[in-house]
Length: 313
Ligand SMILES: NC(=O)c1ccc[n+]([C@@H]2O[C@H](COP(=O)([O-])OP(=O)(O)OC[C@H]3O[C@@H](n4cnc5c(N)ncnc54)[C@H](OP(=O)(O)O)[C@@H]3O)[C@@H](O)[C@H]2O)c1
Image (tube, rainbow, N blue to C red; front, side, top):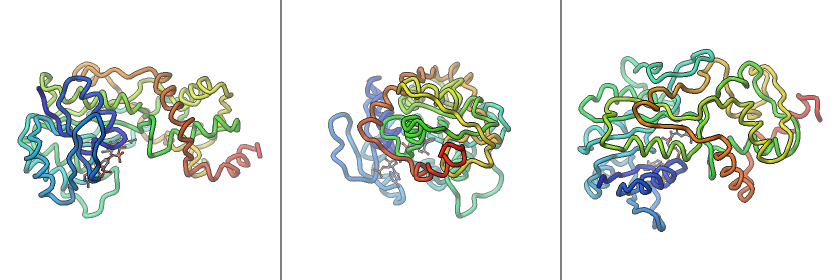
């Protein structure tokens, strides 16, 4: 039986991943900073990776075949894994590290490792780009990369999906970028990302030194909003306007017209066996959470300004 240690396994994507791994009969141990009794469905190890000795201790304690990393943001953290992990596969969960592709869907090879040394301070995106660059230079480490775009689902701590649910629910117009709202957007369901991560842990497949996209296919911002409208029985009052004039927080999924138009899934279908779910299934589950939790996206605080911009105040 494969044994997996899931760093960040109690987080948003981590829980979906642990569930899918266990469904597949993988012995699964989650790890994170909080010293939590992890409940009923998996074992748990407390560690803080900012202290390298704690990573070493977690690895010694669990002796995983697969190390699945959902809590890695800095290149030094990848270096530490390369120094200490001796198992069969390291799965690094990245993000949309792609450069601006002016509306072309991203293929995995559109990310090219960076040159030189990483700067001391890195924002989220550049941190992930540098993590992947370190991986590209670490050919003794049997790594595989999963690249999700913006992920939504129940308990989405980014609250970006709530932004659209709230606006459809209040019946007012939704301000979206005119240049790109009908293009494929970079969106994924948390359950599908858990599925992709679990597929990447299958040691029968040769996935070494490869990156894989995981996302919906063919879902635009328009499609998402119309899907929410169908699921809630409300109208989809889409109000396109230039991306540059959108009020802050009005459309947190963008899509920024300079960026890629979502992902190409050809390689992940063929080599990983990934297939995205239907948007409707993802929205039904997310809506059930939203109706109970009723979270508010921070950008919704500017709703009066948006309505004024749309001439609906
Ligand atoms: N959510 C998205 O839309 C999205 C999109 C693309 C890529 N991703 C990537 O997917 C991964 C998981 O994202 P997520 O949304 O599930 O994030 P999350 O809910 O914040 O989960 C990350 C987990 O990492 C653990 N963690 C953070 N710092 C740690 C440290 N120093 N030592 C040990 N554990 C630490 C946290 O556990 P504790 O709280 O117990 O410390 C947390 O549960 C991330 O790498 C993220 O970059 C996410």
